[in-house]
Length: 169
Image (cartoon, rainbow, N blue to C red; front, side):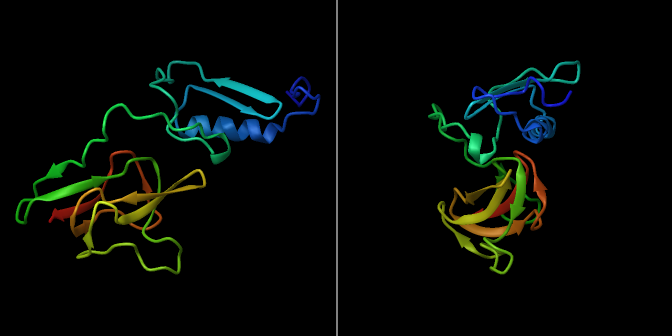
């Protein structure tokens, strides 16, 4: 295809590598539609075919340079689901709020934010999840004690995947 015809408003050629990057993001996050405006460029990509699901709203994540302003939430965020373990006390399962890579500490040299037996408050940071070079602190959201850590440092996590079990205070 080449770069001919791929020009911005000022006549400068579009960086095809950026378009390939956007296509890879669409495939990785199974997006069917993506529109990005960057300076003089406006790129609208659509995937077609039987393997593409109907869009269910805006994509879950954008690169930081293209992140839209967060929309105000009409409904409060649901609390983590409670689960019953057979021999022990009732625990609350804390699930991943997003797709990304789980990190137990702020840097490779730093100790983990929490470990088994750590007392947590709703604002206590449990971990960091990285998605496309954006690092998000994940708070506990509940008070209690960490009973189990269900993921390993550097592991990929999915939306809704259980990460921690907490014995409520």
